[in-house]
Length: 578
Ligand SMILES: [Zn+2]
Image (tube, rainbow, N blue to C red; front, side, top):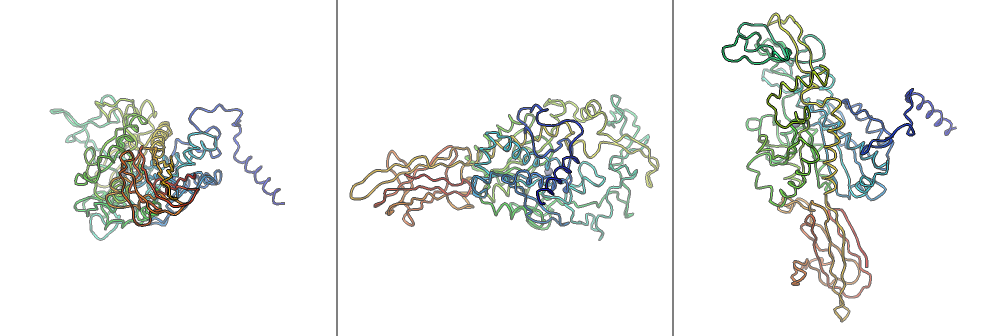
């Protein structure tokens, strides 16, 4: 009976979703580097709200139960779940004991493609694993990905479902009285013509400073000296809703979730956008608690838009000393590879090349947790024409819209009777053009950025007990020397971690025989060692550097079978017996 019901459901399901044309595997030639026959079909030239995202996570978990696990790690202000998707091969070891990479998106909710880039990564890893790709199989056997695509979910849905500009809302949805008149969010933008877009207002005026561009009359350009203006620009669509003489002065939110983190936090009068105190936003607190609960996270990636940047910290110049030469060398090697993987993106430092950020997530993850983390600013004008130099960036945006988007990025100017300004026109770029990827470029850039994160994850520590050497000292005593290698770029402890003792040391243990003494070997050739008097069977080492090794030694009485085990929070475990 049960089997019959299931069978009927499958047939009904297939009939309901199967396309009329043939898309059977035998009718398809797979393009290289792409899942050959994905169990979960996702269209990559559109954006998904939180409901659609959650449904896709669930589909991926159902299709790949050994690889994908979905969990809510907390609730947003408006009680939406904050989902973290764990991707790892569960049939090969406990995901929480493997070196891990944490990836998130959507902290600035108007930067919505950040979530699709995360979703793409989950999908790609699971489906390429299922397709038998050797690299991905090895990666998910050795590593774990914790991916949180939408960490400020309330504002994402606000951006998607309500009329907005490309910049609104960057904040979360906790009401803030921006103009301190006792009312909250009482004077937001107004979609005056009800077309679902918040765009610009212009008015014909002999005193105006703007004229239509001769090459593209949709564009307003500032007049040259001595030239007669035709239009004045009146800002984004809106009216003075509360009659205080100001337009659009108190909209949704206004705080910045990426100025709320517990490292070098500064109040709003120093760092604009800071909320009440570090982690006063429930979404960030949930994410921070999650990250702190996973000491195996060695690598991190936050996604933002825009500018085509691969950013490392520090966010503020006074934190420069936090970044040691050794850690910067690791960042440099990863970042430069990133520039190759994602053409048009530049590897940069936040405070030097962008602006100062206090209380940013990037700095908290590195300086407070010891994680090698990048922030990629997605989307760059390089993607418009594959040139780095632009004489007229805004002009190219119009040209691109005209010839490649067929004008779909722009709301044409149309007349409107404005309650304060009289006859105006409303028009301009849609919220989905300017900072977000046009559909046909979304998958390509998601793939490149994901490839960078896979390279980063691959370079989290890989520890092996490479050698156990036994010397008979006579009198029933043996000297055991063990070498533990780390064959990847990232150390088990960044230098900020070692310095501030963020994570416990790595432990190299010997079982077998009666351990009389244990030591770290500082120089094997010269026989220089540092003894550990307490608990000599479990030697604690502060760090196992990247592409390097550590050597330890024990003096043992008796025993003939010896097992050496290395146990590192960020480096995982390995054992060898002889
Ligand atoms: Zn951002």
